[in-house]
Length: 219
Image (cartoon, rainbow, N blue to C red):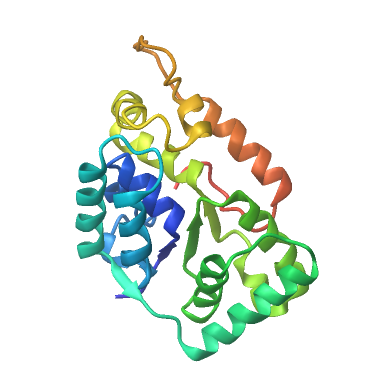
């Protein structure tokens, strides 16, 4: 099956903590078309068991394990590792923040038919915007990089604002911006609640990464 969506470790961690990771899917809604780095099973698993301010580690790990069984675990090919090195070197030259995981996902997207890349690292998205202008092979990533807020907006569209708020506010320390959007500091739940703050965060990021950011406000 062709991979349509590549998901980074930050999204895997936060989505698992919220027990919403199973809803992170490509536009086709097919979990089998999701790809993650093979190392994620160890990196993410270790984080969920030992690190971060997570209230229910057992639940988060169980959510991740279910997702892991449904998606494709991928290893970058030598040519993809070479391109990832080019991307990292250009980012370093330009003084940008882009780690190895994001650079590998970008390289894999280039070589595997341009699937979407979903990352929770806004600095990486801004870096990809600049690198795509400087490295011709990466220019096809325009419109193919999505952020965590777009994924959360898509999940909210699927399950409803109240269900999303309950899941996210059950782990309010996982992501401060997301918790603010879902008003986790407020004990009450209005019947007309909508996480309008998500659109504001997405719009701000779109202003800084206008060509590479996924064009819709929800994934």
